[in-house]
Length: 221
Image (cartoon, rainbow, N blue to C red; front, side, top):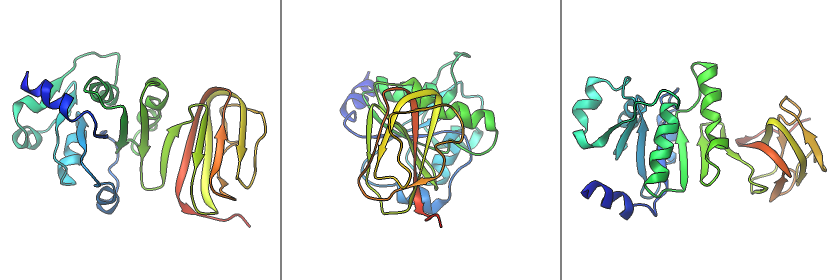
């Protein structure tokens, strides 16, 4: 019961979820260590969080990837086993954050390794529509465009748009190559655009459109 009260008390904080994919550099993880965070590890992601020096509030999943070092480092009440086989550990961890009252969730360590796992991890951006979820790595901040997105970034910042299925009515402003009421299918058409003027905007009428905002500039010749 005390644990539930703690979750409600911290619900104003943004949550940070460590997946069990390839960890980014220590410098990148240090760069996101800002403010107070509610930190949840998706099963084996606990090792990445501990190695990076983050204090873990909860470890969630089927717990088949938790090693002895993690078990020794955290109190028993930090572990929340969810045995359902029809959801991934990352889905379980995100749902845990949402049920604890956190609607803004950043996910790290979600890429690299197996391509099927990396793609499945991206799918969480389209699965939890009532929350604001971003996937962060050293190259991109990835989010779903919920109708309209504004992007403030220096000129020549790399932007990619990836449709999951078919997206209709895609319109952009402030990009080097703008789209107007365009039907964008799943494919390479929206890859590697760039900011021409900030803030740029991305609008989508229907469909799941992922926005990849680069952390670097690369002007096309």
